[in-house]
Length: 392
Ligand SMILES: Cc1ncc(COP(=O)(O)O)c(C=O)c1O
Image (cartoon, rainbow, N blue to C red; front, side, top):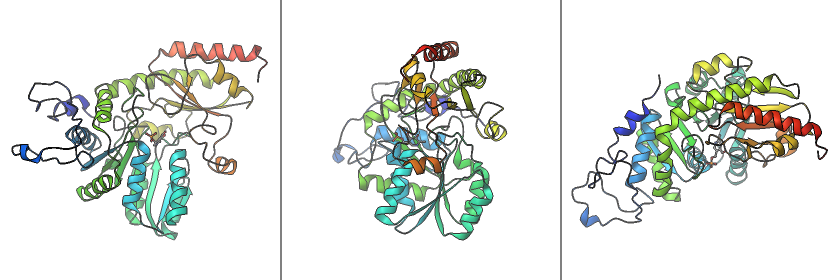
């Protein structure tokens, strides 16, 4: 079921400016640290300090809670802050977390710190092997199960309904990192997850000028605990950053659909090139989980993972592409090329890279809003330059 994002935004009074005395037509930014309690007699809600609550942030939180079909949302200053907040809320020292082994490098690094500081054990499993997930849930006292879908950067699709059912059976909480798909494409809570967390730095804002994140909870009780901890740790997203994120929302679905189409064209082209070993894009019929991807995702996020035949060609392709900046992050209006082993997953050792299936010949493309014909031409030129260049 697709979400009516424009209607949803129009129905949140402050987001649409409706409660603004001057008739503003977009979310006002309340850049204030404190509030005069004596002047708040007639307001719907009282505020005292912006670390704990702020009207601009509350409006964005309402959008996210509704869009993710959750009870409550807390907005924080980055996707990693959202991950940290959830791990703090859901686990205690000596707990065990079961994690899909292809996860964002920053999550992996955070889980290493959780082990060092609080003896929180992490078990890494391939969640496409549901028997292995069940065996781990049966044999360990797992408190929290964690996955992305699609995973970054191997673009595996995790069957969220099946994993959520296993979590319920073994009394474990399920958190899904929805940064890549976003609520424009899937709602993990509807599949049975307890939490959907995401980085708003990527598709959700889409303009690449802000880092932000959010935790959405299925129940109000979890929402209260998470908001309490966000205030206690001082993780709240600033009102101005909430406003920056809000600018991307009215165009989110249309951007993602246009980017999906360009990515599909580029992926089809790349699949036919003899210098390419494999192309992973969940919208290609050759993707190992194409059927699940198209059933679970309304829009395929415009990320393509390409393994080149020769390691020596990687730096040449990166250098010769003109339209793809060598940048981390994804989901922005501009196309990007990223080398996971050297960039987003650089905190993994060589052995960890191997264990998590991250080859040094892997490049991750985030396709932006450029014309797909220009992007294909850019690759054709880059490869031609590689053929005559003697630098690599
Ligand atoms: C899947 C995923 N989750 C979370 C994050 C962290 O988000 P942020 O960079 O906003 O902290 C990233 C960052 O790349 C990511 O790829």
